Amino acid sequence: MKARATETQRKTRIQIENEERILDAALEEFSAHGFRGATIDRIAEHAGMSKPNLLYYFRRKQDIYEALIARLLDKWLEPLQALNAVGDPLPELQSYIRRKLEMARDFPRESRLFANEILQGAPRIKRLLESELKPLVDEKAEILRGWMRAGQINTVDPRHLIFSIWSTTQHYADFDVQVQVILGPDRGAVGRFEDAARYLETLFLDGLRPKDKTGGTPRVRDL
Amino acid sequence: MKARATETQRKTRIQIENEERILDAALEEFSAHGFRGATIDRIAEHAGMSKPNLLYYFRRKQDIYEALIARLLDKWLEPLQALNAVGDPLPELQSYIRRKLEMARDFPRESRLFANEILQGAPRIKRLLESELKPLVDEKAEILRGWMRAGQINTVDPRHLIFSIWSTTQHYADFDVQVQVILGPDRGAVGRFEDAARYLETLFLDGLRPKDKTGGTPRVRDL
DNA sequence: CTAGAGTTTTATCAAACAGTCAATATTTCG
DNA sequence: CGAAATATTGACTGTTTGATAAAACTCTAG
Image (cartoon, rainbow over all chains, first blue to last red):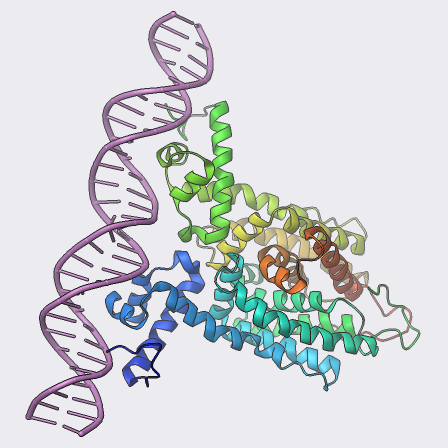
């Protein structure tokens, strides 16, 4: 009999393998076409099994999608989780940017899945965003504000700072086609991401480094 | 008889009106669900006409989509087109950022349609990107390089600079739900965009303003 | 080895889907 | 007005899609 949610039933070897294959195939499809645009047939085909067999493991299309989202969100917020109040601000931010960019490089499908969901109004994860994402961002924004009050980094709206880090890093995964059209095929994906990392560090870290201590060029704008 | 592509036939009042309504409804659907996820039925319903009637104006689903994309691209590239070599660099860039942000505010559906298309690998507009977007970016990147050589702005990879302006501004349209979850409902869309504009100007303009002339804080990184 | 749990397949269904067609209704214009 | 051009509709087609049922097969623990 199939495992029911009520009973705590241990998973079979085959169950584990197949669920893994299904979720991988589903990630491919959902990230490329969104929830509505993806089809069970294609997911099944990509996973190398028949549609009814797939539906034996996930009874409904939406179940696959939700399983995918659930395992994604934690992983996705990991870099921000790691942002630590006790470290020095600039190295902390530098490593946050690096991590985000590495995730865009190493998990572009996950990035696109997430982008698709938000783009379509996040109908299936809005609650999760409110209960998990919001508090986390609030917490980390408070850390950033602390650094700003202490004069360790320049003062800006920390939430918009976070938005800009998200958008610039994820851009390299979500808009990869466009990036490739413009940068040309020379240099591999590796080279592209190195250039991006260098640029983004310049953009964010130089912008945040306090410039007022030496009496040199005055900083232009404080919010 | 219906207008054929071969003959240059003038459009009827009704034709103009209905095509307008269809494209508007289609924008709504395609931007929310992508090409595959959108359905003709829904577009027809949203446009307030029967499906066969809609198909009288656009014979295939793809025709609607292509008409939308065609009219979108020019409009979308307008702000970058306007970037002018003869102006002063910082005001030019400031007004470019403003325009892009205004477009995200005033045409979020267009932004999402574009994002959806790129996200899905741009199967339908990759050629257009190569023939129109690429040369435009090359041209404007050259202008930026000129300003950098003249020491008017700091030296960075101009193409990555453009990417970061695109991604940060469009983020406020494409990821609007997420932005709202985090910023909260207080302040309207107007307030959100004003805050964003202020933040982005700080981020980009302060970062680009040359800091080496006064002998103050040395600039940290040149690519 | 074998009984039962777990897995896979074949056949099937109703709904949704893109698109067609011929008949009807409406508008345009001489 | 009235005929031709244009616009709209209802009925329909073939296909895809999400989902189910039951039979057949395979694995595994005792």
